[in-house]
Length: 338
Image (cartoon, rainbow, N blue to C red; front, side, top):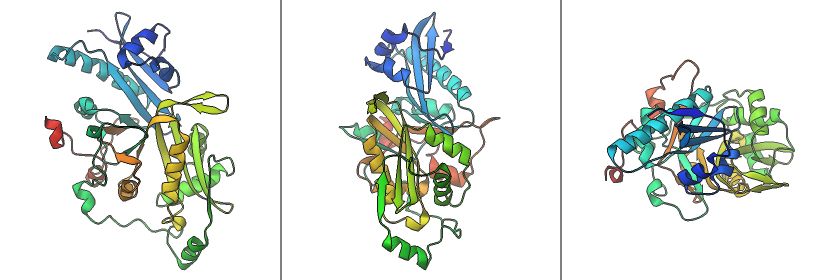
């Protein structure tokens, strides 16, 4: 099998994409994607994948698909060869980004082979019925999550002083469905404070929010105290967003002086309500597990994978961080052995 990879969406692919995905909307969704990759054999479309991204820091890889002429071992091997070629090319295009992949049980081994970790901390928002086999039970926790959470680094800005308590008691929080009433410098400040004082690059923050189709903000009076944004494959019809298939929520951040007021939950739900996509996925840090387990509209996903595509090759993650982020390689739940 000789596979050729191209990133050019051809009109001739319309019928092939409909066949691959069983949907006449497939071609339109590929048109709306940040990166599209196609596998050809003898000039015939045999596989495809697409990436949704703001083009700065993160990317969501979806709809990895390849022709499969049967369940014989040779056919499955050929199918995986196509998918492997598509993933390898995608990695070349996404150097320096954190890449999430929205997959399924059938591709678990393939993603792990390609160096993706199986995420422990990914959630999916659902509007309609969903396949229970792709989600963990509500409130599920991994073994390490029963242990006391490590203390957060305390900075002067993040400490809850008496002044903070008074400020929280008097807060009057309002929400906006855009960030047009604030500055990117203010957004960057909230991100920095919310993530333990880890400095954020204001230029990257500016570009990321500008390139995101959806964003929400929380204010106490005129002060910005929380933000979140989302990237999607939705289209535009005049001033209205048209329905898409996938979206990813990013940069959910609340000023530490205002945490505990359900601002984060309201930001996530308000943003989810703005996005006309069938599936909304978010991947968070281990410390937020309890927070997202309390949002009933979100369920913990079994098949979201992640890989940070570093320049100069993959870097080894510290073991204590890896165990909080990913399941061990080769790990399977009991039902996955069937």
